[in-house]
Image (cartoon, rainbow, N blue to C red):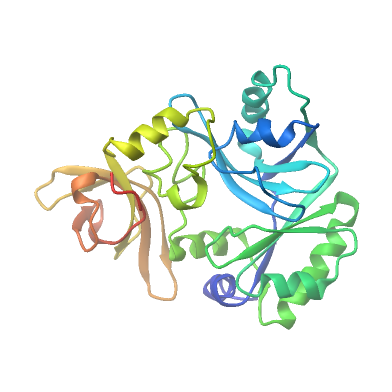
Length: 310
């Protein structure tokens, strides 16, 4: 059995393979699909071609995050890979904004999603030679990667082939815990755990990955652009290093007990024996090397994940 740390290493240095079992696929079709969808997302999908993928958010009018997703250009349609937990809300919100456009939304149940993540992901997909699959560049953990759409009937065979290809390249199949560790090591906060409908995109560190400021109007754009141009973020997401893993929701304080933030997730890295934790800190304390206190000991800010200057 490959160890947790080795699996996380594979995701960063070779390739790790897994099934995306917590996502749903929404097909967007019709002649107006591209221009219409561009008005619903935070990122630009106007110029994609078949085989391209774009990471984006759907946000509320308040500017807070409804969901993250990948848009996959399949040529004849666009496929949205969204968390299963938000697919109903996504369909409800998107459906309200189809007025006169030639657009249809359909949740697909006959498609499975496999993922190969790491710098050797493309090589693994090519080596697996999956005849019924479509592969798209989707970097989920910070080291490059591909999502592979396959018919449900072919999913088991495709997964075995992709695992064999990964092993031949020095990688492996990976479990959910290893993916969490890899995400924390690379500073990739996770939707539903580290960000969601309480955060603006910028404070969750998603500016570079998920926002376009040249694409034209979209739902919730006014708030996002106001934050960018003249606003000030109240808090920012950071990565902490600590001796022990604090509980999600626990307070982050200064040495005098002043509360300056809270933890969203944490885990012990078995390679170091120390804890990694994501937390939101007030702007003044979201600074690299800032010492803080957790419920169970001292910690230090090792990375500030917000790139905007506000």
